[in-house]
Each structure stands twice: as structure tokens, then as C-alpha cells.
Image (cartoon, rainbow, N blue to C red; front, side):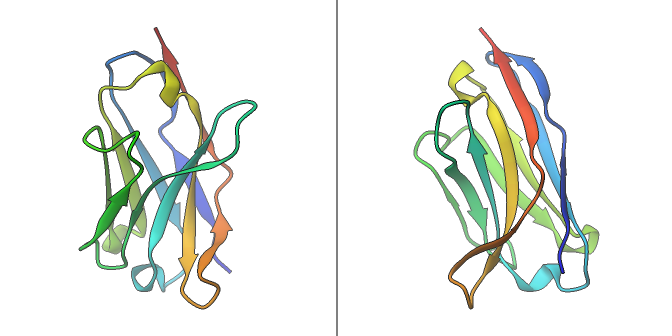
Length: 119
């Protein structure tokens, strides 16, 4: 079992920054890739960013490329999402998720953290 707990969400003005954190339980955190997703009201959940187990490879949705940075600290069992130059359209509930190579998808999800961006 893996538990994921996000934090760091809040209200920020457009153009501002936030850093989200996702703390994972368990001793195998460094063995799996992680991702961030978001879901705005009335919209489907969408991919934001992902990072491999070592942190050596990252990927981003086109909508956040150049503004968001995903990183991880395996010693702290934590993955981060640094969000800069926030736009009103970035407002959503942000979720972190653990990737499963076997399932070829994400099998554990956090409860989410709300990000609100005022214009």
C-alpha cells in the first residue's frame, strides 16, 4: 500500500508562484515514477507532469511547459511541482499519483490540493 498526501495549494494572483508537495509512504518510493494531474470544475482530469524514478527524465503537458517544474527528493519520499507564472486557467485540484510499470498506468492517488488563481 502507498499513501500519497499533497500539500501546498492555495490562492495566488495571476503571475504568481506556488510549490506543491506530495509525500509518499513506504520504502519503495525511489523505485517508481510519479506524476501530477489536475482537474478543474466541469472538466476531465488531465496530465500535468511526470518524473522517472531517478528524476532523470521529466515530461510536461504543453500547457505548462516552461512554467512548471517537477522534481523529487527520494531521501524525503517527496515529489514537488513548482508552478510559476500561474494563469487563471491553471486553477484546479491537483493530484499526485504513483506510476505502475506493471499496470502501465497510475495506481495510487492522493486526495488532491486546491489551487486557485485570481485574475
